[in-house]
Each structure stands twice: as structure tokens, then as C-alpha cells.
Image 1 (spheres, rainbow, N blue to C red):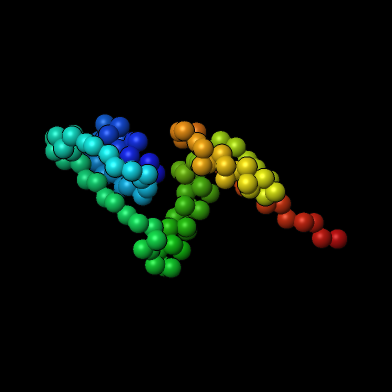
Image 2: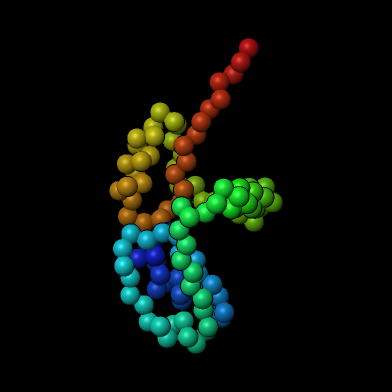
Length: 112
């Protein structure tokens, strides 16, 4: 999500013939092409806003399946009540590094 910060480090973590998908960046980055040539790495850049409605549904279903089966394990840094949405937004905007997801909890009202 922050290619301008993590791109070079991400290349070091990939296995031979590995693939890196960039979905977010807040600026430019520099890299040494030799890091990609030897292990024959592939780098993809995508813009989620270009996705079709069907692609959004497919991606969402894939993630939900992964969570339910346990192979997607999101790291939650902090939970906020919906009334604290402003605090959550402020924390995201002033974050200096990834620590996990910030989650807004929406409580359903009980009906009698």
C-alpha cells in the first residue's frame, strides 16, 4: 500500500519468480533493476478504481472466503466505535508506519 516506502524492501522478500502487486503509493521510489533480473521477478501496478462491479464482487468473495477459512488473517491495530470515526481518520492520516488495520465497529441496535 505504500510502494514509495516499501518497494525496495518488498523486492528483497520475494522468492524467485515472485510477483509484487502495487495498489498504493504516496510518491515516487527508486529501485535497482538487478534485484528483479536475477530472480526474474514481476511487478504489477493496479488501480482499484478501474475495477468492474463484477471484479469487486469476486475480490470481496475471495477475501471473505480467506477469512472464514483462516488463510487471510488481518492484523487489527485498534478498534473504534462509529462515533469515533473522526479519531480513526485522524490516526490514519497521521500514521508513520503500518501497525495493522484500524476498524470502525458498527453495533446493531437490539429490537424488542
